Length: 462
Ligand SMILES: Nc1ncnc2c1ncn2[C@@H]1O[C@H](COP(=O)(O)OP(=O)(O)OP(=O)(O)O)[C@@H](O)[C@H]1O
Ligand SMILES: [Mg+2]
Image 1 (cartoon, rainbow, N blue to C red):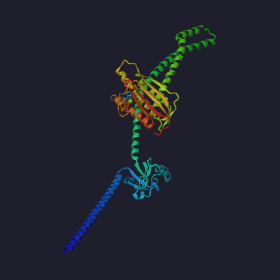
Image 2 (cartoon, protein in one colour; image 1 turned 135 degrees about the horizontal axis):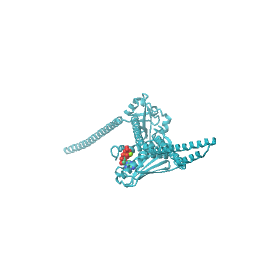
Image 3 (cartoon, rainbow, N blue to C red; image 1 turned 180 degrees about the vertical axis):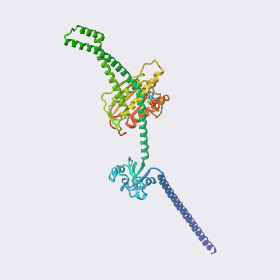
Image 4 (cartoon, rainbow, N blue to C red; image 1 turned 90 degrees about the vertical axis):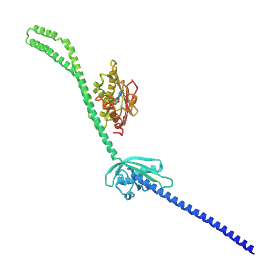
Protein backbone atom coordinates (compact mmCIF):
# COMPACT_ATOMS: atom_id res chain seq x y z
CA UNK A 1 0.00 0.00 0.00
CA UNK A 2 2.76 2.25 1.01
CA UNK A 3 4.59 1.37 -2.14
CA UNK A 4 1.56 2.01 -4.32
CA UNK A 5 1.03 5.40 -2.71
CA UNK A 6 4.61 6.21 -3.23
CA UNK A 7 4.38 5.25 -6.89
CA UNK A 8 1.26 7.32 -7.36
CA UNK A 9 2.89 10.34 -5.79
CA UNK A 10 5.95 9.86 -7.97
CA UNK A 11 3.80 9.64 -11.11
CA UNK A 12 1.89 12.71 -10.14
CA UNK A 13 5.13 14.48 -9.43
CA UNK A 14 6.47 13.61 -12.85
CA UNK A 15 3.29 14.73 -14.50
CA UNK A 16 3.48 17.99 -12.65
CA UNK A 17 7.11 18.43 -13.61
CA UNK A 18 6.44 17.73 -17.23
CA UNK A 19 3.48 20.09 -17.20
CA UNK A 20 5.71 22.64 -15.58
CA UNK A 21 8.33 22.09 -18.28
CA UNK A 22 5.73 22.49 -20.99
CA UNK A 23 4.44 25.64 -19.28
CA UNK A 24 7.98 27.00 -18.97
CA UNK A 25 8.73 26.22 -22.58
CA UNK A 26 5.46 27.84 -23.63
CA UNK A 27 6.32 30.87 -21.53
CA UNK A 28 9.77 31.02 -23.05
CA UNK A 29 8.36 30.78 -26.59
CA UNK A 30 5.74 33.41 -25.80
CA UNK A 31 8.37 35.67 -24.25
CA UNK A 32 10.51 35.12 -27.30
CA UNK A 33 7.63 35.97 -29.58
CA UNK A 34 6.80 39.04 -27.55
CA UNK A 35 10.43 40.18 -27.72
CA UNK A 36 10.54 39.51 -31.45
CA UNK A 37 7.26 41.31 -31.94
CA UNK A 38 8.60 44.19 -29.89
CA UNK A 39 11.81 44.25 -31.85
CA UNK A 40 9.86 44.13 -35.11
CA UNK A 41 7.70 47.06 -34.01
CA UNK A 42 10.81 48.95 -32.90
CA UNK A 43 12.46 48.25 -36.23
CA UNK A 44 9.42 49.41 -38.13
CA UNK A 45 9.19 52.45 -35.93
CA UNK A 46 12.85 53.13 -36.56
CA UNK A 47 12.41 52.62 -40.29
CA UNK A 48 9.41 54.89 -40.29
CA UNK A 49 11.32 57.54 -38.35
CA UNK A 50 14.21 57.17 -40.78
CA UNK A 51 11.89 57.49 -43.79
CA UNK A 52 10.20 60.50 -42.24
CA UNK A 53 13.60 62.07 -41.53
CA UNK A 54 14.70 61.29 -45.09
CA UNK A 55 11.54 62.84 -46.47
CA UNK A 56 12.02 65.89 -44.30
CA UNK A 57 15.67 66.09 -45.37
CA UNK A 58 14.62 65.70 -48.97
CA UNK A 59 12.04 68.45 -48.59
CA UNK A 60 14.58 70.69 -46.84
CA UNK A 61 17.07 70.04 -49.63
CA UNK A 62 14.49 70.97 -52.25
CA UNK A 63 13.68 74.08 -50.23
CA UNK A 64 17.34 75.06 -50.22
CA UNK A 65 17.70 74.91 -54.02
CA UNK A 66 17.55 78.27 -55.67
CA UNK A 67 15.41 76.86 -58.48
CA UNK A 68 11.66 76.43 -58.08
CA UNK A 69 10.47 72.85 -57.95
CA UNK A 70 6.81 72.10 -58.55
CA UNK A 71 4.77 68.94 -58.92
CA UNK A 72 1.30 68.93 -60.34
CA UNK A 73 -1.62 66.63 -60.92
CA UNK A 74 -1.78 65.02 -64.38
CA UNK A 75 -5.58 65.45 -64.59
CA UNK A 76 -6.30 68.88 -63.13
CA UNK A 77 -2.78 70.31 -63.65
CA UNK A 78 -3.15 71.89 -60.20
CA UNK A 79 0.07 72.13 -58.19
CA UNK A 80 0.42 69.47 -55.53
CA UNK A 81 3.87 70.48 -54.34
CA UNK A 82 5.94 73.66 -54.36
CA UNK A 83 9.32 74.08 -52.72
CA UNK A 84 10.24 77.21 -50.81
CA UNK A 85 11.84 78.67 -53.96
CA UNK A 86 8.56 78.19 -55.83
CA UNK A 87 6.73 80.27 -53.26
CA UNK A 88 9.40 82.97 -53.12
CA UNK A 89 9.59 83.10 -56.92
CA UNK A 90 5.86 83.43 -57.48
CA UNK A 91 4.96 85.36 -54.36
CA UNK A 92 2.04 82.97 -53.76
CA UNK A 93 1.57 80.90 -50.59
CA UNK A 94 1.50 77.11 -50.72
CA UNK A 95 -2.25 77.20 -50.21
CA UNK A 96 -2.76 79.64 -53.07
CA UNK A 97 -0.49 77.63 -55.36
CA UNK A 98 -2.43 74.42 -54.69
CA UNK A 99 -5.43 75.98 -56.43
CA UNK A 100 -3.33 77.15 -59.42
CA UNK A 101 -1.61 75.59 -62.44
CA UNK A 102 1.34 76.59 -64.65
CA UNK A 103 -1.17 78.24 -66.99
CA UNK A 104 -2.11 80.68 -64.20
CA UNK A 105 1.53 81.75 -63.90
CA UNK A 106 2.30 82.11 -67.55
CA UNK A 107 0.42 84.62 -69.72
CA UNK A 108 1.68 82.64 -72.75
CA UNK A 109 -0.24 79.52 -71.75
CA UNK A 110 -3.78 78.37 -71.27
CA UNK A 111 -5.03 74.94 -70.27
CA UNK A 112 -5.36 73.76 -73.91
CA UNK A 113 -1.82 74.86 -74.84
CA UNK A 114 -0.49 73.21 -71.71
CA UNK A 115 -2.26 69.96 -72.70
CA UNK A 116 -0.48 70.05 -76.06
CA UNK A 117 2.85 69.99 -74.26
CA UNK A 118 1.91 67.65 -71.45
CA UNK A 119 0.01 65.02 -73.47
CA UNK A 120 3.05 63.54 -75.25
CA UNK A 121 5.02 63.59 -71.97
CA UNK A 122 2.42 61.38 -70.30
CA UNK A 123 2.58 58.92 -73.16
CA UNK A 124 6.34 58.58 -72.85
CA UNK A 125 7.71 59.26 -69.34
CA UNK A 126 11.28 59.08 -70.65
CA UNK A 127 10.58 62.27 -72.62
CA UNK A 128 11.05 65.76 -71.17
CA UNK A 129 10.73 69.31 -72.49
CA UNK A 130 12.78 72.39 -71.89
CA UNK A 131 11.67 75.87 -72.94
CA UNK A 132 11.71 79.52 -71.98
CA UNK A 133 8.68 81.66 -71.27
CA UNK A 134 7.53 84.42 -68.97
CA UNK A 135 6.01 84.03 -65.52
CA UNK A 136 3.80 86.62 -63.97
CA UNK A 137 4.39 87.01 -60.25
CA UNK A 138 1.65 87.69 -57.75
CA UNK A 139 2.73 91.37 -57.74
CA UNK A 140 2.15 91.57 -61.52
CA UNK A 141 5.85 91.67 -62.49
CA UNK A 142 6.84 89.57 -65.49
CA UNK A 143 9.95 87.42 -65.10
CA UNK A 144 11.70 85.45 -67.85
CA UNK A 145 11.99 81.78 -66.91
CA UNK A 146 13.42 78.53 -68.19
CA UNK A 147 11.20 75.48 -67.60
CA UNK A 148 12.01 71.79 -67.45
CA UNK A 149 9.01 69.45 -67.50
CA UNK A 150 8.69 65.68 -67.16
CA UNK A 151 5.99 63.17 -66.28
CA UNK A 152 7.13 60.94 -63.44
CA UNK A 153 5.37 57.66 -62.79
CA UNK A 154 7.24 55.43 -60.27
CA UNK A 155 5.88 51.91 -59.70
CA UNK A 156 3.11 51.81 -57.11
CA UNK A 157 2.88 55.60 -56.87
CA UNK A 158 0.40 57.77 -58.67
CA UNK A 159 1.99 59.59 -61.66
CA UNK A 160 2.60 63.33 -61.49
CA UNK A 161 4.27 66.09 -63.43
CA UNK A 162 7.60 67.33 -62.15
CA UNK A 163 8.87 70.75 -63.17
CA UNK A 164 11.89 72.91 -62.43
CA UNK A 165 11.50 76.62 -63.07
CA UNK A 166 14.56 78.86 -63.22
CA UNK A 167 14.45 82.65 -63.10
CA UNK A 168 16.79 83.74 -65.91
CA UNK A 169 16.46 87.51 -65.65
CA UNK A 170 19.94 87.90 -64.12
CA UNK A 171 21.49 85.72 -66.80
CA UNK A 172 19.71 87.63 -69.59
CA UNK A 173 20.89 90.90 -68.08
CA UNK A 174 24.48 89.63 -67.94
CA UNK A 175 24.23 88.41 -71.53
CA UNK A 176 22.91 91.80 -72.61
CA UNK A 177 25.70 93.57 -70.75
CA UNK A 178 28.25 91.26 -72.37
CA UNK A 179 26.71 91.96 -75.78
CA UNK A 180 26.89 95.70 -75.15
CA UNK A 181 30.51 95.36 -74.02
CA UNK A 182 31.36 93.39 -77.14
CA UNK A 183 29.55 95.91 -79.34
CA UNK A 184 31.57 98.65 -77.65
CA UNK A 185 34.79 96.71 -78.17
CA UNK A 186 33.93 96.12 -81.80
CA UNK A 187 33.14 99.79 -82.24
CA UNK A 188 36.43 100.79 -80.60
CA UNK A 189 38.34 98.37 -82.77
CA UNK A 190 36.51 99.69 -85.83
CA UNK A 191 37.49 103.25 -84.95
CA UNK A 192 41.07 102.13 -84.36
CA UNK A 193 41.17 100.37 -87.73
CA UNK A 194 39.65 103.34 -89.50
CA UNK A 195 42.26 105.56 -87.84
CA UNK A 196 45.11 103.23 -88.76
CA UNK A 197 43.81 102.73 -92.28
CA UNK A 198 43.32 106.45 -92.80
CA UNK A 199 47.09 107.00 -92.86
CA UNK A 200 47.46 104.22 -95.43
CA UNK A 201 44.57 105.58 -97.48
CA UNK A 202 46.12 109.04 -97.47
CA UNK A 203 49.29 107.45 -98.79
CA UNK A 204 47.33 105.51 -101.41
CA UNK A 205 45.50 108.63 -102.55
CA UNK A 206 48.75 110.57 -102.76
CA UNK A 207 50.09 108.75 -105.84
CA UNK A 208 47.06 109.27 -108.13
CA UNK A 209 46.69 112.82 -106.83
CA UNK A 210 50.30 113.49 -107.81
CA UNK A 211 49.83 112.34 -111.38
CA UNK A 212 46.46 114.08 -111.64
CA UNK A 213 48.35 117.24 -110.63
CA UNK A 214 51.20 116.64 -113.11
CA UNK A 215 48.72 116.03 -115.93
CA UNK A 216 46.70 119.12 -115.06
CA UNK A 217 49.93 121.17 -115.12
CA UNK A 218 50.77 119.79 -118.51
CA UNK A 219 47.22 120.52 -119.75
CA UNK A 220 47.50 124.08 -118.43
CA UNK A 221 50.75 124.67 -120.35
CA UNK A 222 49.37 122.94 -123.44
CA UNK A 223 46.31 125.15 -123.30
CA UNK A 224 48.40 128.34 -123.28
CA UNK A 225 50.36 127.02 -126.32
CA UNK A 226 47.17 126.16 -128.15
CA UNK A 227 45.72 129.47 -127.11
CA UNK A 228 48.62 131.24 -128.85
CA UNK A 229 47.90 129.24 -131.99
CA UNK A 230 44.21 130.12 -131.78
CA UNK A 231 45.12 133.80 -131.38
CA UNK A 232 47.19 133.68 -134.58
CA UNK A 233 44.40 131.81 -136.37
CA UNK A 234 41.97 134.61 -135.37
CA UNK A 235 44.39 137.20 -136.77
CA UNK A 236 44.47 135.26 -140.07
CA UNK A 237 40.67 135.26 -140.09
CA UNK A 238 40.64 139.04 -139.62
CA UNK A 239 43.22 139.55 -142.41
CA UNK A 240 41.04 137.38 -144.68
CA UNK A 241 38.02 139.60 -144.01
CA UNK A 242 39.96 142.85 -144.65
CA UNK A 243 41.65 141.40 -147.80
CA UNK A 244 45.07 142.26 -146.42
CA UNK A 245 48.21 140.36 -147.43
CA UNK A 246 47.83 136.96 -145.71
CA UNK A 247 51.42 135.84 -146.06
CA UNK A 248 52.73 137.21 -142.67
CA UNK A 249 49.82 135.63 -140.82
CA UNK A 250 50.30 132.24 -142.46
CA UNK A 251 54.01 132.43 -141.63
CA UNK A 252 53.25 133.31 -138.00
CA UNK A 253 50.84 130.36 -137.66
CA UNK A 254 53.34 127.91 -139.12
CA UNK A 255 55.98 129.25 -136.79
CA UNK A 256 53.70 128.78 -133.81
CA UNK A 257 52.75 125.22 -134.87
CA UNK A 258 56.40 124.38 -134.88
CA UNK A 259 57.15 126.17 -131.60
CA UNK A 260 54.48 124.48 -129.67
CA UNK A 261 55.02 121.09 -131.36
CA UNK A 262 51.34 120.69 -132.27
CA UNK A 263 51.50 116.98 -133.29
CA UNK A 264 53.02 116.21 -129.87
CA UNK A 265 50.28 118.16 -128.12
CA UNK A 266 47.58 116.47 -130.21
CA UNK A 267 48.85 113.10 -129.06
CA UNK A 268 49.65 113.95 -125.46
CA UNK A 269 46.63 116.04 -124.46
CA UNK A 270 44.10 113.17 -124.81
CA UNK A 271 46.56 110.87 -123.00
CA UNK A 272 46.91 113.41 -120.18
CA UNK A 273 43.13 113.74 -119.91
CA UNK A 274 42.85 109.93 -119.85
CA UNK A 275 45.47 109.61 -117.09
CA UNK A 276 43.89 112.36 -115.01
CA UNK A 277 40.53 110.62 -115.35
CA UNK A 278 42.08 107.34 -114.30
CA UNK A 279 43.57 109.05 -111.26
CA UNK A 280 40.24 110.59 -110.35
CA UNK A 281 38.59 107.17 -110.65
CA UNK A 282 41.24 105.60 -108.42
CA UNK A 283 40.82 108.28 -105.78
CA UNK A 284 37.05 108.11 -105.88
CA UNK A 285 37.03 104.31 -105.64
CA UNK A 286 39.39 104.50 -102.65
CA UNK A 287 37.22 107.11 -101.00
CA UNK A 288 34.12 105.04 -101.74
CA UNK A 289 35.76 101.91 -100.32
CA UNK A 290 36.79 103.79 -97.18
CA UNK A 291 33.29 105.23 -96.91
CA UNK A 292 31.76 101.78 -97.28
CA UNK A 293 34.20 100.28 -94.81
CA UNK A 294 33.82 102.92 -92.16
CA UNK A 295 30.05 103.17 -92.52
CA UNK A 296 28.55 102.50 -89.09
CA UNK A 297 26.16 100.00 -90.72
CA UNK A 298 22.60 99.10 -90.02
CA UNK A 299 21.47 97.82 -86.66
CA UNK A 300 19.67 95.05 -88.51
CA UNK A 301 21.31 92.48 -90.74
CA UNK A 302 21.18 93.21 -94.45
CA UNK A 303 21.65 91.32 -97.71
CA UNK A 304 25.26 91.69 -98.79
CA UNK A 305 27.51 90.60 -101.60
CA UNK A 306 30.40 89.07 -99.68
CA UNK A 307 32.76 89.34 -102.69
CA UNK A 308 32.23 93.09 -102.75
CA UNK A 309 32.91 93.34 -99.02
CA UNK A 310 36.16 91.42 -99.52
CA UNK A 311 37.25 93.61 -102.46
CA UNK A 312 36.51 96.80 -100.51
CA UNK A 313 38.40 95.59 -97.46
CA UNK A 314 41.41 94.48 -99.50
CA UNK A 315 41.43 97.90 -101.18
CA UNK A 316 41.26 99.98 -98.01
CA UNK A 317 43.91 97.83 -96.35
CA UNK A 318 46.27 97.94 -99.37
CA UNK A 319 48.89 99.87 -97.46
CA UNK A 320 48.94 97.16 -94.77
CA UNK A 321 49.90 94.37 -97.17
CA UNK A 322 51.37 95.78 -100.35
CA UNK A 323 54.98 95.98 -99.12
CA UNK A 324 55.09 92.38 -97.91
CA UNK A 325 52.65 90.43 -100.06
CA UNK A 326 50.52 90.14 -103.15
CA UNK A 327 46.85 89.48 -102.59
CA UNK A 328 45.23 86.98 -104.93
CA UNK A 329 41.45 86.91 -105.06
CA UNK A 330 39.62 83.81 -106.23
CA UNK A 331 35.99 84.76 -105.63
CA UNK A 332 33.16 82.52 -106.81
CA UNK A 333 31.12 84.62 -109.26
CA UNK A 334 27.72 83.09 -108.58
CA UNK A 335 27.44 83.47 -104.80
CA UNK A 336 24.04 84.34 -103.37
CA UNK A 337 23.69 87.39 -101.16
CA UNK A 338 24.02 86.63 -97.46
CA UNK A 339 22.06 88.03 -94.58
CA UNK A 340 24.51 89.63 -92.18
CA UNK A 341 25.96 92.73 -90.55
CA UNK A 342 28.09 93.92 -93.49
CA UNK A 343 30.12 96.21 -91.34
CA UNK A 344 31.12 93.53 -88.86
CA UNK A 345 31.97 90.97 -91.52
CA UNK A 346 34.19 93.61 -93.17
CA UNK A 347 35.98 94.02 -89.84
CA UNK A 348 36.50 90.24 -89.59
CA UNK A 349 38.05 90.10 -93.08
CA UNK A 350 40.26 93.07 -92.19
CA UNK A 351 41.46 91.46 -88.94
CA UNK A 352 42.37 88.23 -90.76
CA UNK A 353 44.01 90.08 -93.66
CA UNK A 354 46.11 92.26 -91.35
CA UNK A 355 47.16 89.19 -89.32
CA UNK A 356 48.19 87.42 -92.54
CA UNK A 357 50.26 90.42 -93.67
CA UNK A 358 51.87 90.78 -90.23
CA UNK A 359 52.74 87.08 -90.16
CA UNK A 360 54.38 87.32 -93.61
CA UNK A 361 56.26 90.43 -92.48
CA UNK A 362 57.59 88.57 -89.41
CA UNK A 363 58.85 85.78 -91.70
CA UNK A 364 60.43 88.24 -94.15
CA UNK A 365 62.08 90.20 -91.34
CA UNK A 366 64.03 87.05 -90.46
CA UNK A 367 65.00 86.36 -94.09
CA UNK A 368 65.34 89.83 -95.62
CA UNK A 369 66.19 88.72 -99.16
CA UNK A 370 63.17 86.48 -99.62
CA UNK A 371 60.61 87.44 -102.25
CA UNK A 372 57.24 88.96 -101.27
CA UNK A 373 54.75 86.59 -99.65
CA UNK A 374 51.25 85.88 -100.83
CA UNK A 375 47.77 86.06 -99.36
CA UNK A 376 45.07 84.09 -101.15
CA UNK A 377 41.45 84.91 -100.46
CA UNK A 378 38.77 82.66 -101.90
CA UNK A 379 35.01 82.34 -101.60
CA UNK A 380 32.83 79.33 -102.36
CA UNK A 381 29.21 78.34 -101.92
CA UNK A 382 28.90 75.06 -100.02
CA UNK A 383 25.31 73.82 -99.58
CA UNK A 384 23.52 76.38 -97.42
CA UNK A 385 26.62 78.32 -96.43
CA UNK A 386 29.39 80.42 -97.87
CA UNK A 387 32.99 79.55 -97.22
CA UNK A 388 35.66 82.25 -97.11
CA UNK A 389 39.29 81.22 -96.83
CA UNK A 390 42.24 83.46 -96.13
CA UNK A 391 45.54 81.66 -96.60
CA UNK A 392 48.98 83.15 -96.12
CA UNK A 393 52.53 81.89 -96.41
CA UNK A 394 53.68 83.67 -93.29
CA UNK A 395 55.49 82.28 -90.27
CA UNK A 396 52.66 79.87 -89.37
CA UNK A 397 51.09 79.18 -85.97
CA UNK A 398 52.90 76.77 -83.60
CA UNK A 399 50.59 73.87 -82.56
CA UNK A 400 50.94 74.73 -78.86
CA UNK A 401 49.22 78.11 -79.33
CA UNK A 402 46.72 77.14 -82.03
CA UNK A 403 43.97 76.66 -79.46
CA UNK A 404 44.74 79.96 -77.72
CA UNK A 405 44.76 82.40 -80.62
CA UNK A 406 41.02 83.09 -80.35
CA UNK A 407 41.26 83.91 -76.62
CA UNK A 408 40.69 87.58 -75.84
CA UNK A 409 43.98 89.44 -75.32
CA UNK A 410 46.15 86.53 -76.47
CA UNK A 411 48.96 87.96 -78.57
CA UNK A 412 52.49 87.06 -79.54
CA UNK A 413 53.17 90.53 -80.87
CA UNK A 414 55.21 93.22 -79.19
CA UNK A 415 53.57 95.73 -76.91
CA UNK A 416 51.98 98.42 -79.01
CA UNK A 417 51.76 96.16 -82.07
CA UNK A 418 48.98 93.82 -81.05
CA UNK A 419 46.35 93.77 -78.35
CA UNK A 420 45.17 90.21 -79.02
CA UNK A 421 41.61 91.23 -79.71
CA UNK A 422 41.45 90.77 -83.48
CA UNK A 423 40.62 87.07 -83.53
CA UNK A 424 38.46 87.15 -80.38
CA UNK A 425 36.26 89.79 -82.02
CA UNK A 426 36.28 87.91 -85.32
CA UNK A 427 35.11 84.70 -83.67
CA UNK A 428 32.41 86.50 -81.69
CA UNK A 429 31.09 88.15 -84.85
CA UNK A 430 31.14 84.97 -86.93
CA UNK A 431 29.99 82.40 -84.38
CA UNK A 432 27.78 84.28 -81.94
CA UNK A 433 26.29 86.94 -84.16
CA UNK A 434 26.03 85.01 -87.42
CA UNK A 435 25.74 81.41 -86.31
CA UNK A 436 28.77 80.61 -88.42
CA UNK A 437 32.17 79.06 -87.79
CA UNK A 438 35.71 80.45 -87.76
CA UNK A 439 38.66 78.10 -87.54
CA UNK A 440 42.36 78.04 -88.24
CA UNK A 441 44.85 75.43 -89.41
CA UNK A 442 48.55 75.81 -89.73
CA UNK A 443 51.38 73.55 -90.77
CA UNK A 444 54.82 74.43 -89.51
CA UNK A 445 56.61 76.63 -92.00
CA UNK A 446 53.67 76.69 -94.37
CA UNK A 447 51.72 79.67 -93.15
CA UNK A 448 48.15 79.60 -91.91
CA UNK A 449 44.67 79.13 -93.35
CA UNK A 450 41.66 80.72 -91.70
CA UNK A 451 38.23 79.45 -92.74
CA UNK A 452 34.91 81.19 -92.21
CA UNK A 453 31.54 79.56 -92.77
CA UNK A 454 28.53 81.85 -92.90
CA UNK A 455 24.97 80.57 -93.29
CA UNK A 456 23.24 82.02 -96.36
CA UNK A 457 19.82 82.08 -94.80
CA UNK A 458 18.84 84.18 -91.87
CA UNK A 459 20.08 82.58 -88.71
CA UNK A 460 18.40 82.76 -85.31
CA UNK A 461 21.55 84.31 -83.81
CA UNK A 462 21.17 88.10 -84.09
N1 LIG B 1 47.81 84.45 -90.01
C1 LIG B 1 48.47 84.22 -88.88
N2 LIG B 1 49.68 83.61 -88.91
C2 LIG B 1 50.37 83.37 -87.77
N3 LIG B 1 49.93 83.69 -86.53
C3 LIG B 1 48.72 84.28 -86.44
C4 LIG B 1 47.94 84.57 -87.58
N4 LIG B 1 46.80 85.16 -87.17
C5 LIG B 1 46.87 85.23 -85.82
N5 LIG B 1 48.04 84.71 -85.37
C6 LIG B 1 48.47 84.58 -83.96
O1 LIG B 1 47.33 84.77 -83.14
C7 LIG B 1 47.57 85.82 -82.20
C8 LIG B 1 46.26 86.52 -81.89
O2 LIG B 1 45.79 87.21 -83.03
P1 LIG B 1 44.82 88.45 -82.84
O3 LIG B 1 44.49 88.97 -84.19
O4 LIG B 1 43.71 88.05 -81.95
O5 LIG B 1 45.68 89.49 -82.02
P2 LIG B 1 46.96 90.32 -82.51
O6 LIG B 1 47.03 90.30 -84.00
O7 LIG B 1 48.12 89.82 -81.76
O8 LIG B 1 46.55 91.77 -82.00
P3 LIG B 1 45.41 92.74 -82.61
O9 LIG B 1 44.68 91.96 -83.66
O10 LIG B 1 44.54 93.09 -81.44
O11 LIG B 1 46.17 93.87 -83.18
C9 LIG B 1 48.62 86.68 -82.85
O12 LIG B 1 49.36 87.43 -81.91
C10 LIG B 1 49.47 85.65 -83.58
O13 LIG B 1 50.39 85.04 -82.69
MG1 LIG C 1 45.33 90.76 -85.19
